[in-house]
Length: 208
Image 1 (spheres, one colour):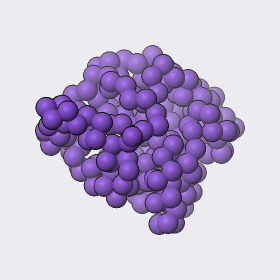
Image 2 (cartoon, rainbow, N blue to C red):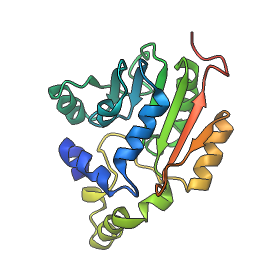
Image 3 (cartoon, one colour):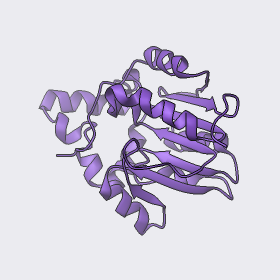
Image 4 (cartoon, rainbow, N blue to C red):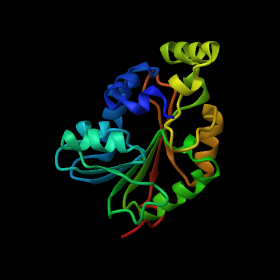
């Protein structure tokens, strides 16, 4: 049974406001890193929120296992497919791949996803991932403590009903993990505890 956030896409988008910092700033930062006129594949895209922030000329495709998110996005004219990021077939040719709050759901397959995306993206891979510190901070942290106290982890937690839910890494652990996968640049907007990493696949001979 998925948590409430994953049953109702509009509620999921609202829940992004619980994140430490400004969720608009997160998406604007990612869009600026992508640039204009790029083809973008957004893995773990939810209801395709990032698509609304992309710069002119970008072509967007999102993949998410949750069919509710895909249907909701499609009704709003956003190209989101209910597809598995590892077992859903070949990726379309794109300049940029975004991995959105997904790695902690994959367990030991997070390495597999990173290496696959690094081999396929023509310009860059952008990883946007929560940290353990984020789960205990601010309003998000209040919800975290409330659901634990009331025994409502399944109802109010990070359970999408499809993928496994793993423990997010601490920020230091996550940055160390990403840096061991390939050289990357960490971008940190003010007052936000997540990790945002950018991998330059042109420098390592990504797909052409």
